[in-house]
Length: 140
Image (cartoon, rainbow, N blue to C red):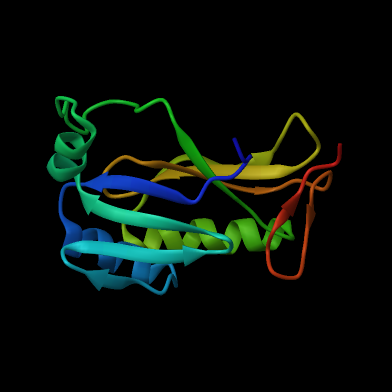
């Protein structure tokens, strides 16, 4: 099996609101047949109705009431970029769950939840290299 993530699909309660939220973050969204696609480097983030995603996966939708056990992360090149993205997310309606601060690994990071409670970490990790295209290179 290839070590690759091609798509990350987020089940959302209100597709139009989710599209506006991610658009306010500066993401270029393209909607096709009630599904919103965002190119994210060599992968894509997909916004799709939460009930449709649950049905497609063959599971019951427990709702967006609690922590889903997953956090998505975007690594950036500087602490200032972390602060700028966190501020943009808050302005777009995100709930800041952990303000950006020093980390145990010598970096700087914060967390926010999008409109549907999906957790995002915005991090500057000086131990990770980001290529010009934003691709992450692990140090080992």
